[in-house]
Image (cartoon, rainbow, N blue to C red; front, side, top):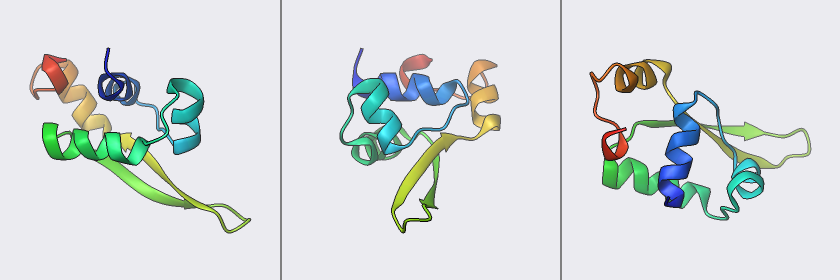
Length: 83
């Protein structure tokens, strides 16, 4: 299974993902690039926001809208690779 598919499957569970989680869970060092590919090449509507740590560090948090997940699971929306 490709890293893009693995990330997509994780997001389809309704969970969010951050770069550190992607590194720990999937050994992915380029989360923003892989999710960018899912958005650009596959039309997946991945949501994101910038998280600010008290220390001043910033990183992205990514997720799929619950309505999208429900639509894919109900067969109303075509997901990645016919999910």
